[in-house]
Amino acid sequence: MSETHVIHRHLHRLPPRAVGGRGIYLRDAAGRDYIDASGGAAVSCLGHGHPDVLAAMHAQIDRLAYAHTSFFTTEVAEELADQLVRTAPAGMSHAYFVSGGSEAVEAALKMARQYFVEIGQPQRSRFIARRQSYHGNTLGALAVGGNAWRRAQFAPLLIDVEHVAPCYPYREQRGDETPEQYGQRLARELDEAIVRIGADQVIAFVAETVGGATAGVLTPVPGYFKAVREVCDRHGVLLILDEVMCGMGRTGTLHACEQDGVVPDLMTIAKGLGGGYQPIGAVLAQGRIVEAMSAGSGFFQHGHTYLGHPVACAAALAVQRVIERDGLLARVRVAGEHLGGSLRQALGDHPHVGDIRGRGLFWGVELVSERAGKTPFDPERKLHARIKAEAFARGLLVYPMGGTVDGRYGDHVLLAPPFVSTDAQLDTIVGRLQDALQAALA
Ligand code: PMP
Image 1 (tube, protein in one colour):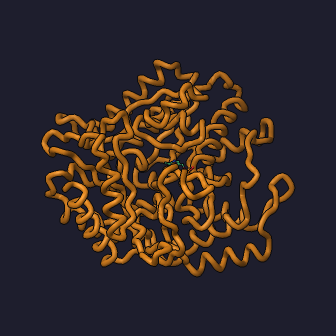
Image 2 (image 1 turned 120 degrees about the horizontal axis):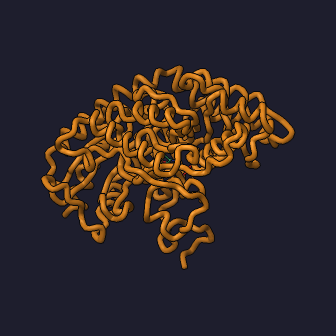
Image 3 (image 1 turned 30 degrees about the horizontal axis):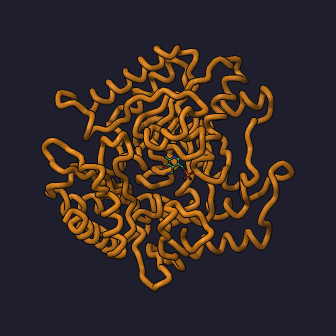
């Protein structure tokens, strides 16, 4: 047994203690600094110790730290909802606050289900989601998630979900297809799945706009989500976009779906919403969904003790105001071009780098043992874990994944640096990653 009473993920291996964080750096107890090049897991958009966020949190704690929502609303939760609705895609008129990404997904699934009950279609009980997706670790979120390895030991899962193909051009776009044709094919497969299940049985199609935690940043091909939206509309099926990881500015627009010209019925956000300063997530909902629940039972059959927590809302509001005030979405776009260019320059010709893809400050590098055949490394080699360790030893935090999807798709490294990273810092990240890769492959 280890020398701690905390259950860490790795029960036999205690990680170093983090004792401080400033800007893009985290410091451990030995005084070593690490560049937080993954923002934790695409969380730290403003970096650590941002004075404006800390000041807003302090002020809120002094005023009011907690009030249960069965008794009160709070000004700060109302203000955050106003801010999110003002900047949301068309028609999204309400926000429901929770404490993180999985909770947001659970709430969205239940809201979608309740919506159909309220409008007299209670027979709709099925969801469709995608393989190679991640939607969280609670049981409902795990059920929609498309990661066979994570799901296996908890099967049978609580809700019955059909999984269709993700949009993964590097692996699954055929040589004779344009990106547009590939997107259309995927939408046809979704259409067929809906028809097979029975169009009046399906509640929603759930997808990450840009895939994150399972397959190293999957950017959709042009037209894919428009075609998906059209299929959903034709069958009266809701579209739930999970932007927990790719949302809140990470891809260079506040919501990733803005770049795909599509508006979901429900959208989940978390991570960058509070930037790591407090646990917070939210569901953004189209007005008609909330109106149906309001006109029907008048009660959303869901809830958690800490929803709309005032300090979490204060942190998120401050984070979002800093992003607006400092023009950080524009900075993400410019910095993202720089990071992408720098990655391609350093690793584009590397014999074991199969694909480099990304949007904004959200990039993935896919590793292969052999480029022409796109052959993954043997999962036993645990290359992703080695890269993480070699990067760590060089003062660099990256988010690796590997062999998690039926063992088929191999190893990836995900980068999601804070929006405040300078070009020079981004170059340092790429340089250290390059060294870490060399050492891990040696
Ligand atoms: N959805 C997506 C797309 C995610 O990437 C994650 C977390 N990686 C979650 C949901 C779950 O969020 P949390 O870990 O905050 O519960």
